[in-house]
Image (cartoon, rainbow, N blue to C red):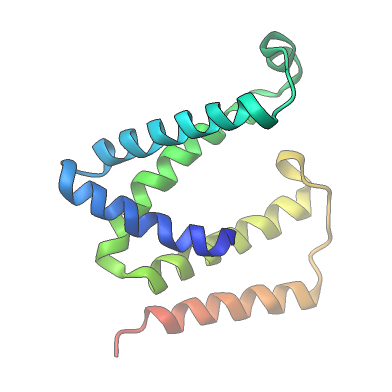
Length: 138
């Protein structure tokens, strides 16, 4: 389901962007809708938490997910109509798999350390090659 959402969201947001004055306006609207939805969900399904305690326990980089969300939403709605869904998602996947390999190797951002094996490198290489093939214009 997340894969379908990931490829659908930029299309929806690109349409919004084209109709309300660009990616930053559309990102503002999209993320405000997200804030309302997650706030409503939180009322019903999330446990209580102390913001102060969370602020004390969480490393600074743990708070940057929202910034990255803004970047992804705005960048993808700008790129989606120019490259198309397949190219956009291939580039996203390629970036994700390379970053994931590095995060795993060094245990970054809360991930446990995982070795870079030859099979993992081969898998990543195949994804990179596949992305290149997707980007070739016929």
